[in-house]
Length: 113
Image (tube, rainbow, N blue to C red; front, side):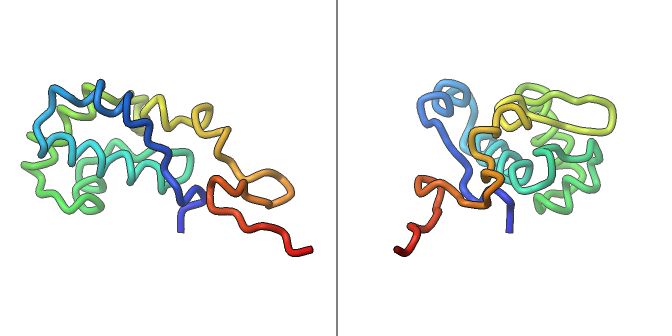
């Protein structure tokens, strides 16, 4: 399970940022965001075979469908692909505190008294 099982989705930003995309493109982008959210440091390898395997895409689909999405919405730093809103700085507010208690708003449990 991901260290952050809940992906915060700000619907106003999502609609504004993806309104111009087709349903296929929005779905591809969302699948990529979920994948990135679930891996350490919210970054994925810049490797078409790795991406294709994890997203259930053929090599042609990665080239024709996924790569344009990555180019538009993500940053590539050599071997890694990141997305600014999912970066380590962006998810700091959602990190589990050092005491291990997850906030109730993120699925934490009330303490029994």
